[in-house]
Length: 103
Length: 235
Image (cartoon, rainbow over all chains, first blue to last red; front, side):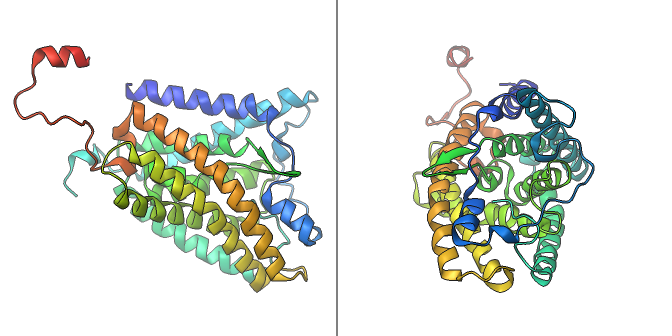
């Protein structure tokens, strides 16, 4: 597969996972939350700081339909991660193809 | 495994913040050797993919769930330093935009999932690869083993932090047993997802897999100039 095609397929899979499949994910507490509840330290968790983001708890503020609300938040999260991560790695990279160097 | 604000006291959170800052600082320097024109876009994709993967909670036994942490996966695909940066970016986006994982706990979460996750995962991957047959087929298996152990390792380090600076008065032994037990099970899910994703990338673009470098791409050795007929058949 060519580079561009590979990246496009990978991104599409990520967008489908975050935008569509996430609706069907288990809503049970994760391992740490569950252990905290069972062993009795869950109460020490503080509410998350409100950063003013419209995507708190993977839902989109103002969108009532849970499926669409979660889908938008998931797609936005993938986009933000790609933007921040991709930008960082593009700046950090060494020009050229490292596999052609001996070091 | 996202630690919320409040589980750990301020001194412990400051300490893990310092560990995370040093870790990310070193990773920013060392990742340069892993990143070039071809691998930088791949690393961005890996970060985005881990974000998406972390949204897919799978049920684990009675009333609990787990999701991909992605440390071992990222380390194998793009290298441990770049991988640690991938997971740190995911945690930053989650903390800032999704209210997932506390902001004072960001250092704790980076320490557990980015540093412990990537480096334990990558160390186990390397050890397994040294023992397994020298072929591309060993890469997903070794990655799965790294993933399997990286999750209880992070759970163990969380318990250590809880023992040092947990705000609630709960017996550490009880927390340790429960954390390790449940996260070993979650590690099985991590291993399956990591193994499948790595084998898919190895099958389509082995050249983009950091952990597959130096392994023979083909079983056959070509000793002469390429034969146009076999080249045609290959294409």
